[in-house]
Image 1 (tube, rainbow, N blue to C red):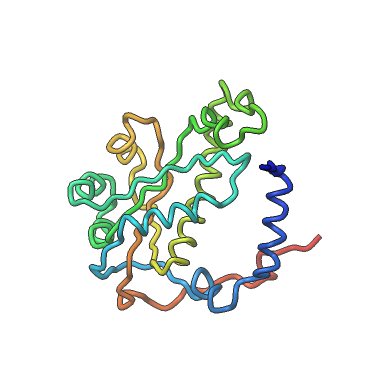
Image 2 (cartoon, rainbow, N blue to C red):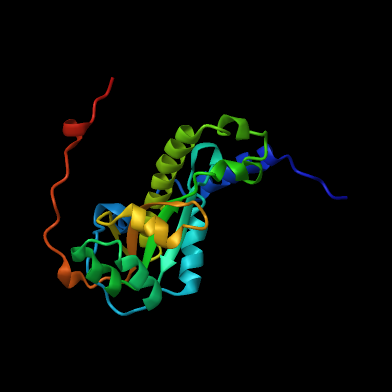
Length: 216
């Protein structure tokens, strides 16, 4: 006899099981993904495989977004032809960084993400919250795709890749070159691959707790 488990009970049991298996990352893992991680500017010629990009997606897409809207879209620029197209949008100092990186991912977003809410948020129809509200759609998509871009970078580091985010480019040119048919919009760029650490300089200072935190 097949027993259909309640989805809520299944989800709750999965979280309890996870907490029993692991309560926190070890310090070495935290060092890898954030504390000792660096933004990179030079790259080795070791390629990033399709399998790695699929693994990176699987982790990234698990990150939380508002109402599971998942507005981020990704274009992984790897071919020379695609790099030529992307180079049109970059500031001069960023062109060599992009060309040397095995992959430059355009972190973009779909302003019409809400049309797919029946797939991503099937509990009830939330499309009326966004229909005919372009400003609300834009803010929601930009905010949540930025979150997903951060998940993307942390996930890449967790998989042993290095990252180097870039914002020195023309969004309008990228959108015209890559998204004319979809209406997607670029957020930021992220080089990924296996870094040549010889291009690094000293790590820049960070704020202390009291500089940026208030407990009320």
